[in-house]
Image (cartoon, rainbow, N blue to C red; front, side, top):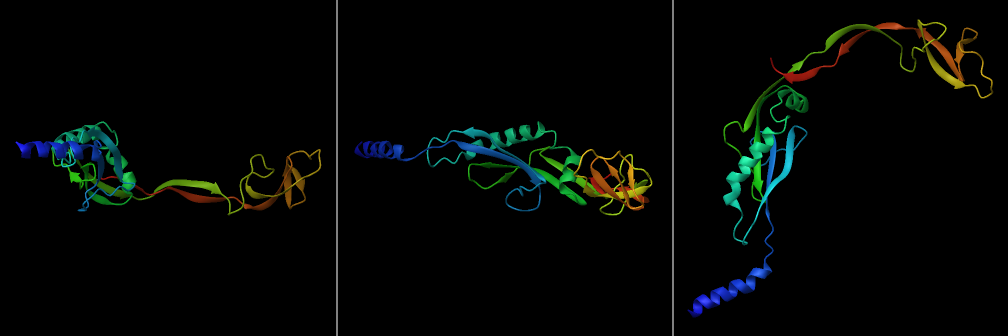
Length: 208
């Protein structure tokens, strides 16, 4: 009897000494790379804390809530339109890739845990799409431009200065063979415009 009373007294004395914070359930999606934790890079989704569980005593880590945490993580993932969007993942990975995106959960500061339930992963295969020709377009050397409404629409020009005295001369006023004015801006003539090949940049997309 004395032993029981002593044990109860110890519990009553020690209980206020412990701060029993709620146990957070953290959830993320990342590439399966064999590591012990999700690689939270650009190619990942970190939903952070999606639920909390009461921790009634310092010896209870909340591990009994792991199953509920996993279920909530899967529900959170399925509500995110990017989780199963292969195009979204390939854009983030940005290189040819074949692998799996998996879900990770963690209770408080415990080690990360991977979900093995059905539909908890997304298989991804990304392929590089080569640049696509878009025909030719007019272009000027570096520093020059095609000036709208210039006296010669086929020549490049560059801004060379400004007129500081008003009134400004009429637009398109020639300055000999050297250049012309537009408003207060003085333009210097450059070379004729060139036709350059235009291509769409290479992309990484889901493989067909």
